[in-house]
Image (cartoon, rainbow, N blue to C red; front, side, top):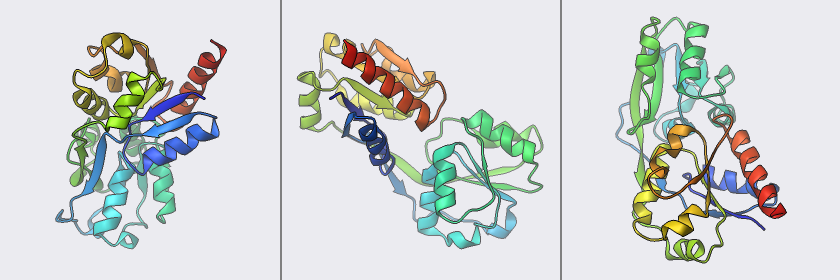
Length: 245
């Protein structure tokens, strides 16, 4: 059975592992980042907003930990993609606009729906884009508030390194640029270039793959779209190719 390493944070890592298992792919879980809610974050009055924007499901999970989410569920919610939209639905939101893409698509969705008031964007400390700036030129105001921090793993577990060095891991899945960069930092000088070059790396986007380009990982494949379905299609295609070899 093909073995793949899942590097995304929990609880998404276990969801991805379950999806891989359904495809007949064995998954190892090794999160590179850990989501920590900022319990002292100041949450503004929901009445001041005409909508909620999510660039990650973690924003809503953390908001649910430190605020009464029932005060927000009446608001239109603009989700960057399927994972955020599904999380919102599970937490009671009804009016959900799924951008089905990345930051640019989310900004376009917000502008297209003309919310008619300020948008609250619960986000992480580290952000790969600026949603507020993306919509400001169209007359939409977004208040971005950091309510969680994705804290990096400091080292790879010995058993994971052993799996790499034995050649057991056929592929690694990366969903964010910071996750990929953290992995490279934790890997250090372990794993010779020839071993790295033998591992397939499956990335959500070209931007996600950037930290890997100068780290001797030469077999890089990109998802057709920045979502879980596209990543699973990529994983399945690789597994089938490997099984034919």
